[in-house]
Length: 73
Image 1 (cartoon, helix red, strand yellow):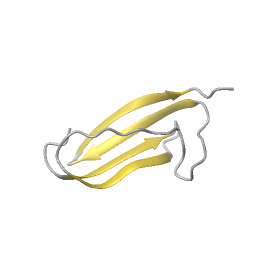
Image 2: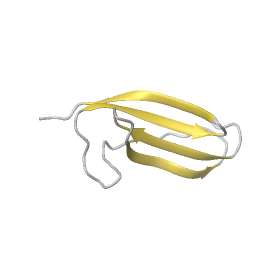
Image 3: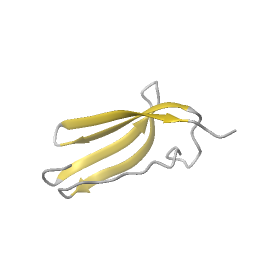
């Protein structure tokens, strides 16, 4: 939750630390936000199965977590 307006950056990274997708980058008003990742890269291509990490940063604070993607075969 943003306690005040801030520059917000939310992105997804692969295991090697490469940015896979940008979910949001810009000015955001205070409050709670929800973001959905469609398991695609910024170029629209689907990602492969594996472990990915999301990272959200604003006002010098960072929140991160892990996402497991399992593709249907």
